Amino acid sequence: MAKGFGARILTPQQEKEVKIVKRSILKHFQCLKEPRTGRRQDHNLTAIVTIGILAVLSGADGFVAIEAYGKAKQEWLEMFLELPHGIPSHDTFGRVFGMLETEELEKSFLN
Image (cartoon, rainbow, N blue to C red; front, side, top):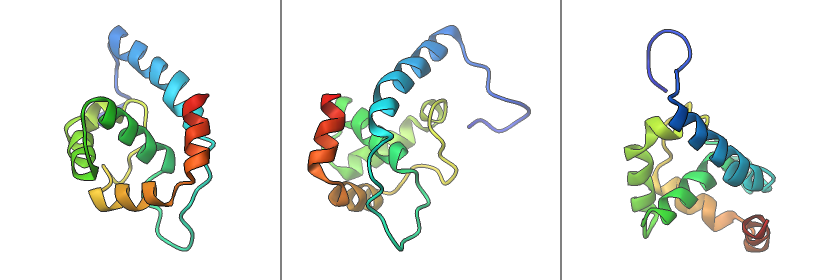
């Protein structure tokens, strides 16, 4: 999020984008079971999945590309995601996506 005083002021277009993402991606993927146990969890699971989905929809073809997308779009992503530790690394994306239950992920997509 931008540094400075007070909360970020969004344009009407940005407010519309935030509402759409919250009603669609965040709503359907927030119920995924956390697969990480006994490890640091610096990054929220919903944030990791959301960034991954948006990156792939934008043409990302791997975890390095997903990380690059996240870094390029970080300010926009912070409008609707909590990213206190910034954008996860490509290793984190790979590890977390590798741990997710594929049936559960598919069910979230179908919803």
